[in-house]
Image (cartoon, rainbow, N blue to C red; front, side, top):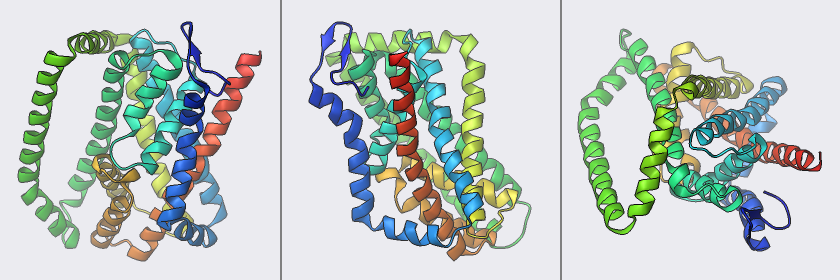
Length: 324
């Protein structure tokens, strides 16, 4: 992805486009973090954090996109697109940086654009894999949140009252969400049939290939579980770095519910909403709110810092493999 000219399948694409896609997201993410004031909060959190768990958190942050990329690579192979792992890591990290910098759900579309730009994997082939990624991540977070809530329910106190209130309103929220999704899906299908029949046929064909590849289901599910577990470890390490030790129930709620909120948030990287959700949950499960806010800021800052480090490593590996 970092060569002077992006060339795939005999087509030479402009150098400026490749440079913009390769380095633009990193610069944009850095600019947004500086402008938002988050850098000062992260600096304060880092200044008071314990070194060992912070370094461990950084290591987990560098492994997370590699696991995520490996899963996507397996899915791409299911739709007849074989891309080297270092290149998939590059695309995954670049998309994550865009997601931290740009409002809206830009991560998956950027991955699709990068796959098309540098590896001639058309949107028709990559779209089912990107949708499957989102569905698997959301399902894992939802399952973790449900397990955490189930463990909270038998207890008395503010945690059960908060959960009861959440359950009372969940039916309405789910009905509205289902209606919006149904309308969006219907509009998308009508538009696809009318204006993009060929593209739709490619998406359907790729979706069938992905769904029919049973040999790759097990590694995809195992990598999804590993990705979910690493996210739990990252939240626990962030809390430990500021002097908190999270119990299993608190960890399940603090790691899954805020990340689920961030997954559906239109704000860049769920900025503010994830931290607010962690503070609200901490208040009802008996975890000190100031400490969990510091942990949330540290968690975000270290994971963002890990992205360019992982990106540099992926590009170094890619260059060495080309030189070999």
